[in-house]
Amino acid sequence: MKKLSDNKIVRGTANIFADLGYADPETHLLKAGLVARIQGVINEQNLTQTAAAQRVGISQPDVSRLLNGQFRDVSVERLMRMLNKLGCDVDIVIREHGKRPRKPDTIHLVASIV
Image (cartoon, rainbow, N blue to C red):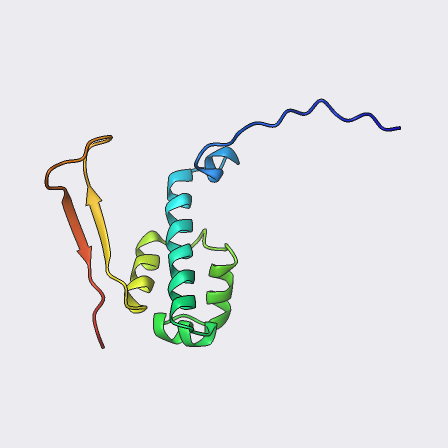
């Protein structure tokens, strides 16, 4: 009979990319969140990957790669613009760590209706 190893289970953090030792894990987590939202919008709008690709201005294979987690070489800005082209407004809120300001600085990236 084979003895079970003495490996311990370690609870991860809220950032899997940090747990896996990625360089710049915060950016990877942000990109993953944006890609998840892109996938959600595509599903909500019942778009095929081909239709989504036409809307955001990339090829269908690129949409497929993006939705399969291959987004390392895609910038945060480009992902936000893709959301814009899918009809979403994107807001960036700037505030001090751990504080909820009365009026945060907000940058709006608004979808243009074509």
